[in-house]
Image 1 (spheres, rainbow, N blue to C red):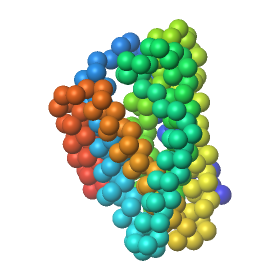
Image 2: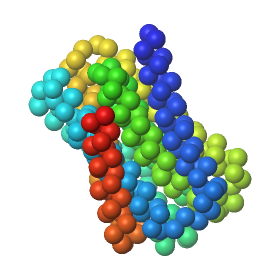
Image 3: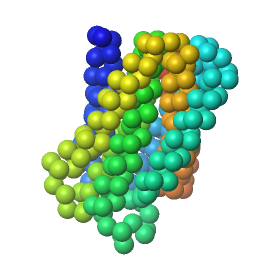
Image 4: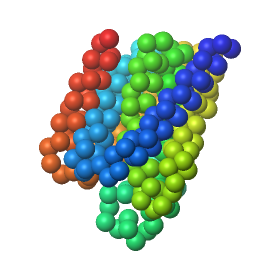
Length: 245
């Protein structure tokens, strides 16, 4: 039970600190440049890809074989695809965003982030159930990737007139579902190695979809230059180094 509590607390901490730090960064940066946003989004995307491909999925394949791992990836991608269809996507960098309403767009972004945080928490919990080092590596990568998401959520709400306190509270709330995901992941992970493998690959599929379908494309949309590409490459290198350590 202590391991379940520890996993849950870690999930809450990673989610709340990650998106909350993005909200705090919005206060400090005011209006960050497109180059900066593109680089940070690319860096987060590269880091996630490396950790998933070099840490999470190999562990899942080793525990229960390729078939179970591939099935988990497909299920994870299918779930996030359904979520994306149900939650409208709005990007504060788009020109049409001005006609849609700043505050509402920030809230929609926050809802999307909150929903995506649950399977990411699942990855942390099942990762800890499989191996302490894997769980901590995932927690670090996910926490870093949550920072630009919190920033993207906070910026339109601030521009729309929300107070700093309300914006910070909103970004913190968006990170809370990660704690519940970590709780479920650890509980399922304690049942059998096959279930741990399925949880890991399922979470890996959701994280790959979020990274390849959202983080990296948005990093390119925000800034068309080479900075976002360099950010992705640097993130992958950092993820490889993290896996090696």
